[in-house]
Image 1 (cartoon, rainbow, N blue to C red):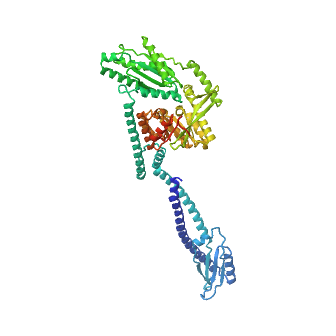
Image 2: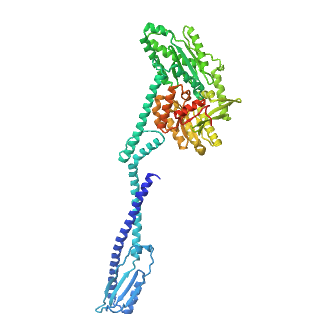
Image 3: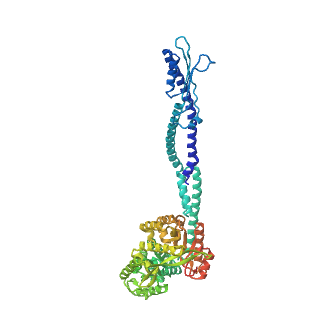
Length: 640
């Protein structure tokens, strides 16, 4: 029950009842007294008028009895008597009618007594005293008037109370308006969104808001400190101090993770550019100048990555710069972009005539290995180095697809549309388990049946992105997860594309779809990649709102790359996070990944979130992540 209703029941209800009772009692007492006095006056006036009239008529006893009997028969009198002049003698005439014939409730007489005194007047026609005339009207008239007054007062009070209630409701809403902000903030914190709100003027509400704001501020400070600490740690272990780019080892790990991905970024382009004659440049221009050149090259490439948030750059050795561009379908454009950025820096330092920038590039897809890719790039780089203009050479991957890009696009477009319409998309489930071996949920990964061959998501999801079929694929993924829940009665997760946050059609469809599948939806989880969640926080929160309304959980997967955005975790409202497989593997030998994993686990625990490790490939990795304190793990090395 809402606070408004409770206040109404606790205060307004008793107040209205009290007003009615008190008003009715006071009105009844005063009205009955007034009517009693008026009735006594009417009795006296009637007696005087009748006596004066009879004195003028000078009737004998028979005529007088007939007259008074006719008067009594009018039905408005309780009693008419003619008393003897002798007080000891009985009444000469006595007519009485104690009955009642009115419409007021009988209980009214029990509540309020009206006992008017009878009116008396002397009958004395001429000089002879004939007797004393006593007249008393029925009290029904007074009670009728009292009942009408009570009814009028009831409706008047009811109208007054209704008006007062309306005014009171408006005032109450204004008084309690700050409470809405307190409720919104409390609800947000309950959903693990640590927001701050202005303090209301009401002192009691202000104290609550101040306390919750302090909690949100401390969470924000904690996340900011952890972000700074992780950034410094990554700089010490993964970043080349001269350029600010990734070192060879971390860069190759990123490349390997993309090649194993089942998301849209499982394909893209890689560019390799070599700064020739670096040793000679050091001799001619001095190491200090060259350090400045390398630092500026690194800054320029990082600015390039700011525009393309998915791109990653690394310095593989002293003179080789590599750019990983997920989703980029034109390898040569990627290489020329990297080459141009470096040329601009060299031109600013007037070094463009003293060196060359041989370049190589390749398009990668799911199924390629890091070794294959780098071997092909090295071969293409040699060819480029032999050319005077250092043209970017596209590497020829032996395992690459010989079909031209346009033909591949047309083929995949046809196959994907057919698969969607003919229900040829499947869901492969992989268990996510707790350290105790209990099931968290099944992670659902899409598969497509092409000519009887099952292809994994890494092969077709890049084409889903390029062909703008994400909306349809997200619908299929969600529907298949619901179908698996209905079939197995076990919690299942659906992986959504980043377009689910950008396409308003999906949130609208999702709301209606979840309403029509209310029961299985309570065991459904939806996941969005870290990059998309941090890039579109408001849209992510909208997705969370729609999902939570149906009892659906929402998680962020592939965590660990966007360290600078950790502070946003306190405002997104997700239900769990999943660490990318890149940071879950080989923890015993990679202290940097172990420290990063441990930090994310601590952050998740501070926010009341489960932290799950992805991509576990064997029992040793499973033991390692559980020892660090993750809430769950998934991958080929996890059994249920």
